[in-house]
Image 1: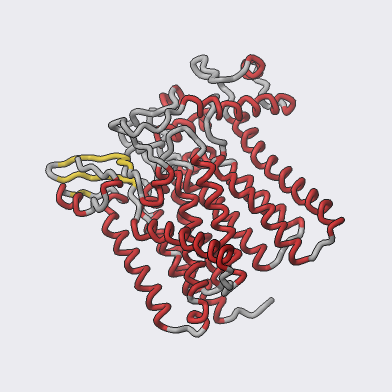
Image 2: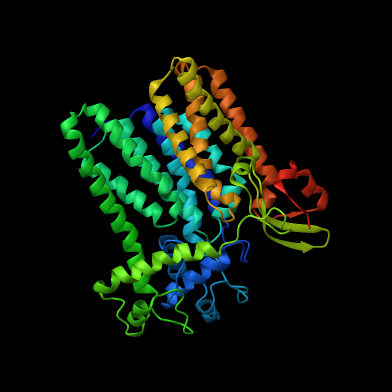
Length: 487
């Protein structure tokens, strides 16, 4: 067993500090407000269908909703309340008096809290500096939009957890040069888990060929061995991803198999027959049932409206405007006298601005090398920056091809990539000063995090449902493209 060094103690201490901050920003008092907001109306209905075994189809893979339901089963805070109406609808309009969100929001809030530790680990692997990794973790810890959305019974924080877990493992592999089949298997499992929550996790699939590229470089594999090894890697990882992905669907069809009010959704006649004969547990029927469940996704997507800028209550926004925080969404509000409590999807502008500047600088760095032959200061960090940039661009380009309306929180995954990039860029540009431990570098980074925190405090009433007067609201209405509107 290796003896722990000073750097190890610093890294452990940094992790503890990050998780403590994350507990207070993401997890503490997550059950409030005790009201439905945004897509909780849909996902809580889905969770109760699992709990009651009611058949349904959904436009998202099952894992996130299964975990939401698991939280309710663990705590059982609403067993004495009349919740049977939840299984008769896909959209809950009202909840019974005294309904508790402790169970429903538990796993979204918990995974969001733990994601701070994963974000820190990614930065630690990239920067190899516990202090800077801890400081730049503030970009995750104090973003108002990430926090407010993650404290609801929704899928994104669960997806982000598996997304960051996959990135953590990937950076561990390329930093430690671990490329055995076992390491690829774990990568496949993590990608499969992320895809089993939301399909826009697909960009993680790009990590497989990137990882293989680094393996080939390290081992100097001969050409005639290359194809054989590539087939092995791709085949095994693909099989594992499919096992995880299809396995969650199989769990879904086993748990949700009792048809309510003759609602078969878009099930085909053979699927209806299986449901009526109560043969969903038969593995022979699984491929047909899973196929129908997956085909419901494109069917649902066809019914989603397109973005309409002329629509008065349009909450959607264009993807190219997301890095600037357009457009905020008023999740709920409650007026009392001259004060109003708001729950707003409001970005921390310092954090989001840092993210898009990091992407711009990464593009400039790439073009400077390609066009002007700029000498690379740190090849390792440059490669990492280009990997992050590739993932970011792949996501954004794919989103731009979609015709359906999209929302600000669909930017969370590329946002996180841009924030990781900011730490790598800082280390790239100030590499020599960091090595020499110049106090000005650490002082500057610390000052920046303090500014980020103060900005978080300014917008925290939108995050934690706190009362504001109209004048106080307008003090926070910094940019017209946010579309903040006081009540």
